[in-house]
Length: 120
Image: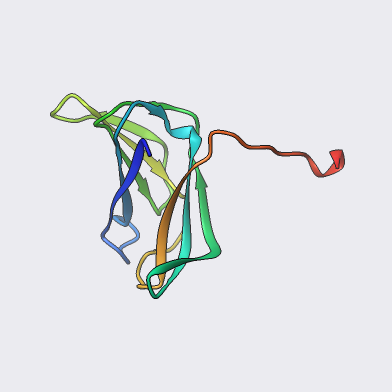
């Protein structure tokens, strides 16, 4: 994948808790979804506790994507390397990564379909 999970940092501290993603190749982060699922033994479970669908935004190889658990406003900054750090906020009011049975899953989903309920 063009974006990979690097780490989950500062678990259980709502002000700092975040997931760090590394951009491996130029892409649009809006083609990705980040999920919090369960984890049992060596496998993720199919239950999804939280989902974050990134807004469409071009990101470049070497950039960082940071997703804070807390509420906030999307921003970006330039790193010393000249690459960018893109900050997103899940808008959840409490920490979500403090137990070992939780797993982040990053999905690449450039194609999708949706219908309004009244269209079905």
